[in-house]
Image (tube, rainbow, N blue to C red; front, side, top):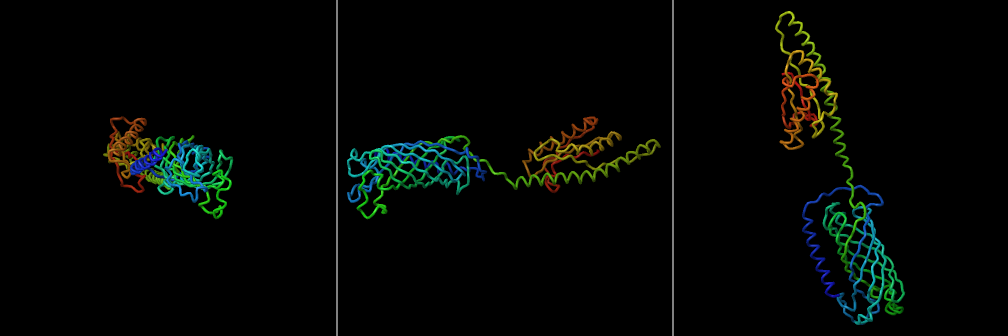
Length: 390
């Protein structure tokens, strides 16, 4: 038993050291939303080594070392619990079954059977202090609680309080290894000796209580959903909505301006036709660019309404047998230069395909990818393609 407890202690120190090294790897931390009642449940099973300090041994001058065979024994524990937040949980834990009532140095004489049943509040300080991370390897979890103990050999019951530290080490999303140390203080009846503690200064003194230290190693299995959902990023949603509003306003302003220009271009085209019939030289119609807008990172046209202005420009081009230049742009504030170049080319080709559908010969369309730019404000205005007469 002595060798086993020493091995458990060294295993704990080694595992904790490895966990600390793993914790140096950056992990994502974020705020979480409350999960349903049926989420974040877990069960645990451990091998437990325990050392007992009975009120009856006061004055016997026995060794206090937990490694003494007359003081310790091997048992097990099982528990079921739930995390209500990443930092706060509850656990119901059963511990037993082989123990000692220490009244001397004869471990066979001290042997008894017992169990304890405790309700405990868990505080995951790793999540509380460092933020929740679903990939964190080591979680440091102190706990406090209370419950009832029974000495089955003596058929006695006692109330008690306890505290300890639970360390969990992530193996998979569902499974973790445990290393736990705990301490409990119980009424003198836990020892099963009726007269214990009543003649040594009163049962309210700590020396007249029964005490238990435990070291446990085992596994935790997470039931059902074991992770926490991220809370919505309100600022990001607001920024996205504002960006969409800005884009719509930009489209409206462009449309109003370009509609007026297109009317002038149509008038010029009519004048050119009339002048041609009279054998006059007609000035070339120069058109302002028509914009077609896109959503961030996309090459699909955001609103088909943008094509209405393009259709008007197409009619001018066909009437004058003019070529059209389609220039694609991307927002330089998002994405790499290489990505933005390809995106601008895709946007230009998308609009060029629409021109072909409107009856423009592909040979009369020139496609240009201008890459990422930052010439318009707000930045959403730069996510577009323009069509101009050449």
